[in-house]
Length: 264
Image 1: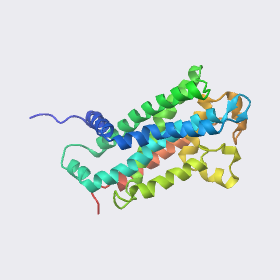
Image 2: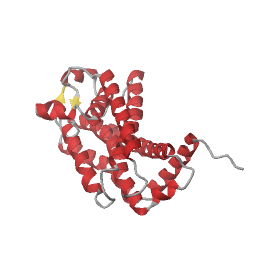
Image 3: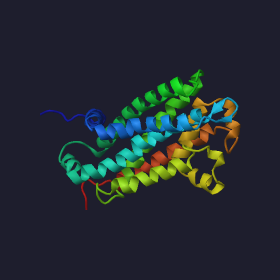
Image 4: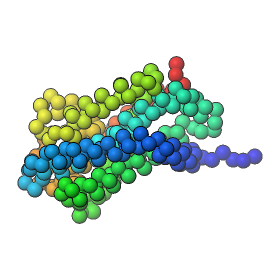
């Protein structure tokens, strides 16, 4: 009798399948990977002002778009696609296989991470070539970038799975999920300098992970002197890690509690 592979191995195999399926959806690939690039080209070409010594808005915006890309690839993409897969019966069919729900989540996380890596490479290349983005030279900044990418991917994936139970069906998923992401992008300082936003908006944004992801990415790609422009006058790396980890736990809890294999 053949032995059933372990949860992690099944998750890795599921991840490969998710990547293949995603790459075959041309519209999803363009929207998820290239839409942030299009926004960067538009905003970077229009807004060329210097917002601090040695920092242009284009450089600021690149850091925000990398953080926002994590939310687009993870939370938004998954929260929309799972209800569609549920409508099609694809998830229900998986229930009759040896695939554990944990392996399904691992597969989703791998797909998100793979698309995010491609998106980040493209954003960095365009940012350096056309908008004066300075690549970090210190090892500590690359280590910060790595844990932000990993923790941001994990929390966005978990929250996306959890939120996928909110839409009643796949047809209405985009109408529910997309406005949430757009509002968070405006509140979190992706499109505008965060400290120039109204105080109440800053306080609301501080509750959610995107604000901390954008601030973390700024600490990687902007000079250390820009930390004085932040609300706390520092990068708050430790607080960023704690808040992202808390949201990861919250996302995992609700993902397990609310995940449905089929529509009610």
